[in-house]
Image (tube, rainbow, N blue to C red; front, top):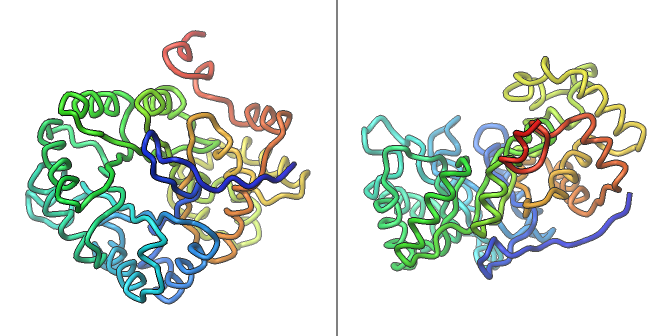
Length: 333
């Protein structure tokens, strides 16, 4: 393996430069205590990560919105913190039992943005992302609200998360008819174990100029040495959640994968993340470290280059969906 540094990329077709790794905050407020979260944010900024990704719902283990408030407290310390990072947050998840306190209605988008600005203690959000598709919200209504927020200076760019390929196309076509910039980024679940995004989401994002950032690039710890950690009794993330759901089905592949990593003397977490970052159409990844060591491991992975032989071996262990490549050709057997 060779190592190469290339830390920043343009965000889709925009001129904005972001680090290839975004600091995800989903583990804050419940899995990472506040003091440790502050240290992680300082460490990420010091190591060149310039985008922090959160959501209005994050912190639900304590209270919804808690994580945005925590990031806001970190920003309030000054020292150039706000000037040196991009803030990315999300809208759409239910924030209370109130019937309109969710989704992508114009009312909720505008009200949720005001709430996020207040908790973060800032006057604008750099990347405002739709957390999930809202099938009840017409695109004219969504873009009316987003355009208002952009025109008022409260949002700089709009992004999406967890959309299907045709949702991306519909959103962008409607934005174009309104002479709006539309979305410049997309987040999707993507890793060696779950490769569905290659079929339609990645091609759609590339066609419409969206920078794609993979979330859960290690599938909740499944690709970070889950079997070895379970055997040693040291598993945390890999002993729960999506990792445990998929492990019974993929156990033979995970065994081969961990053997592959052992033979090279490299941490499985670094191999898994390096593979994601090497894939066509992927601008970067959202990582959710719980410790500085995990963050440093992700930074090492961002500098790693897999050789063609290694990439081919990984493809053999975790084959692409259907016959590989983008749809519709991928469906042809």
